[in-house]
Length: 515
Ligand code: NAP
Ligand code: MG
Image (spheres, rainbow, N blue to C red):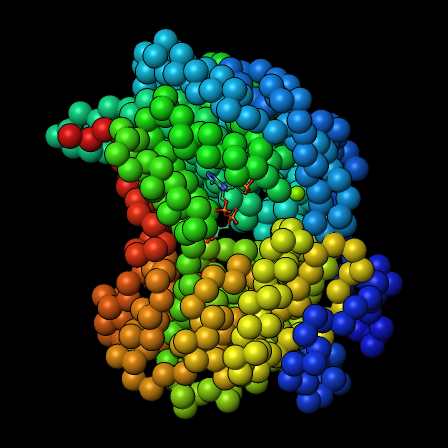
């Protein structure tokens, strides 16, 4: 990669505009020179997007066709890095949702459930291959619509999207081997509601196992990131998936609620906030609907004195600043063993200064744009509460672009377990640092949250890892690594992080009647 030494000027293409939001409360870093001394500047490396066509208007995808919404209403989808409107998206109302569920029912009864399983598998393989072919275009769109750095959408999201379709394609004609001694049957019509942090990946997590299991789908993407789901609809057309097998209804929360309340839905899969998840659980109680909920998280990274510290710092940085912290399993709490606290804080301070915040289409960018103004406001408010409750904020002094929604990588020290920042999901690039003395104290503190999605343990001792893995109430525990995913591995939460698993055989079982 072409590099040149940094001058103290920020590169011209990254206009310096505003200082970070909480300047007054920020603990100043001691040496500015040290900061720049450790950082090399890169020449801009922008991903080309001019060849990618974005239609000015996007319709609903129902029964294999793109259709105007019943209400005639559209809403804008913006690029959070520029605040420019990319396109208009159709707002589906109850009539549209009803049409989509009907289409899914017809396709289920007349086509999809009648197809030999190996034929269903062929469609899934075909979809996976087209996604691979178009992965660069899809990555650019994901980055433009959602704000995540291109190196993440290109190197993480898209390969994982294709991998999920390939993985479940393989199971489609082997269900009797997936569940030996059982007769797995499809559930029927699956309603699926997804959030904005991994738009295409969440769609893949939900659509691929549903189709492999013989179900049909009505998917509701998040309001701010519908674009790639609609591009996926074009891919489904190209793959000649029979009409109605997958339908996509775009819109806000009310569209999701219409899907939740529709009596023709047999299975509901929701990924999103715990608050909305609880409402959905209430709405489904007493109905025939099977439900899986993938909800929020407040993951703890536990760092022992005997861990390889530099490696751990990289993992912890990845765990919280990856995708701007818009990750349900983000390691937003760090518990450091007391003896290494000072060293760790110094290393964290130095490292956040070297993270590159800016144009998400630049291949060198580490931290892209916050997904929406509403989310940015939420992050600011929660950080302010941390400062008000006595936390000390350390924030990178990186320059933030003038347009768009940005938050500098930050961490809070002096945090106690009762502070809101230690309890509530922040969904932004902000880490809360606390300490512990013994392994018992570590897992007790880590478990002291209503959530239980994921956790990380950093130590040189395998025995400590095994001890903690058994004590941590979290669906996934990573040891000496973080944010590692694979389609064969189930993912899901304990406690208020939801129930049910996605990925692996467990994710397939969620779309099958297995008895
Ligand atoms: P959210 O507000 O709960 O929204 C999730 C989805 O539900 C969106 O499509 C949303 O539509 C829709 N929705 C909103 N209100 C609804 C209602 N009353 N009935 C039915 N659907 C409704 O969550 P978010 O802010 O988009 O996403 C962030 C959350 O997702 C975080 O809490 C994160 O931890 C969680 N998450 C969990 C996992 C996991 O696997 N456990 C993975 C990723 C994200 P609109 O977009 O129009 O509001
Ligand atoms: Mg957008």
